[in-house]
Image (cartoon, rainbow, N blue to C red; front, top):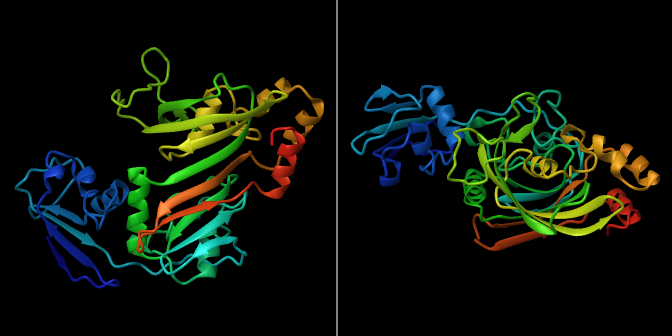
Length: 340
């Protein structure tokens, strides 16, 4: 492999012949094996930008790699961010030169999107520190995983490219530790178990995700039954308490797909309280006590909390572990309902 030049702030060109594990794969999948690229989305971005050549010619994502191919990838220099800073006091659980761990409040979007251009966690981080990973000049500096707007809890952010690559790899390899808690409307069939499926955009409501169904109209639950659509998702759960038609749940994530917990719980018949997108409002009448029904109708958010996060520090290789309880206002409600 040849890299030239290798300055942090300059354009970089990589020339490489396929590694054994890359041979036979589509180009976009194969490039994810290179540490300078490390995931398919970045590979696709480079290919779509005509920055990848195979044997001297601009290549398509579908090109099947041969062992004799010569790949040339041009990685552009980081582009200065145009993101605006947002003056918001962050609840910092840990920070050093490589990572920053934040307890994100409910209501805060992680990165800029439609309707939230300047008031996100990313904007607040830019105000907080000058050191964030700006890999490929993305609009999501340092972000290696995300939490939904209404989900509270722990999120880790990379402060340099090496940390970004390390953390991304850990999430991809499923070596991180992630525990979530939720209050659900309904009674889980089993006290513990796992929900498995391929998750993709809902075929009708594009705001939602749903499990991919087989010919029998049931979710595909075997990873070998790859439908070519969606991403494999696994949620392990445990029922901690049940009362008045509510279930207090603990979830351990094996994968981390968009809306994963919300979809898996909703499709199991126990949507997360307050999650109107996934049918919680329709189940409020099934709750036994009228006072709890009123509490549920007035919830400012859905009740999902990222309580525990563990990962290996990118530089020191020390195993890091963080834990954060529910925000106090939500904890008071859960105790009031007799679930805590």
